[in-house]
Image (cartoon, rainbow, N blue to C red):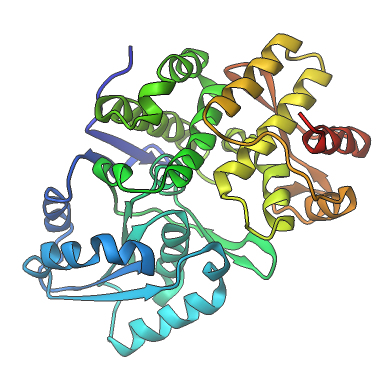
Length: 367
């Protein structure tokens, strides 16, 4: 039985750093803003044009009586706008609005908005405070937590970035009811990952509650988001700069990012993670860590949440080339995350090119 969460404290190097707040509206966001002492400061709400239509006016109204000035920066939605050009445009906007180090950014949106806003916050005037307000499932359980910020450089995903902690992460779970089902289920890629790398009981709970999750049952969503946030918090507190254990969170991401690049972002991030998990699970099975039944159960679970485990139109050479440029490379060797068993991840730097080719061939096969 999972707990109902409303607030989780995240520590950085052993000291309290920020809170993750789970709510069912934006109304209590005012309390978090007031706690940051922004009464005479400027705040810039950064969002994309899709999210802006849904929530920007509401947040502008909420903020206006609690800060000195509210402005907004809206950029076109999509991964292809998560780049240095958009960051430069945001820099210029902040300069024109005379933002200083004591002013504030608010990231309103999914992972693209949160990553880009966080990187801007980390680098504008060598650091300005920011608040994460994730509106997608994937952003709530993954990208908004842990201080990883960054943008894509040309075709290379998240190649430019910084570790920079938010002042708060505020989640309005009601947002999940309004997002497209495909985008919602994309977030399940990261959630299934959390169970696979650290909590087999949670993984089994996800399978048992699949229908309620897909139906967006409010109580079940609150338990699920809370538990995934708790798992991610526990990992990033141990290893905030991804030197060791935090790499577990990259399960499914190594091949997944390569697929994402070569499919030219026509697949959503969580869908690519799902494909990457299928490949990593196959490697874990090949290594003798997982039984055939466990491997097949993982594949069936991914598919049960309407996520892909196969992809066509790939060239093995292209995927290998992308892997060779992966930002997780260590002295020319990929840090690959495997499952020693369901619920226990392991870092492996001994995966051979031949094994990678077999894993890529596996995800390219017709089911």
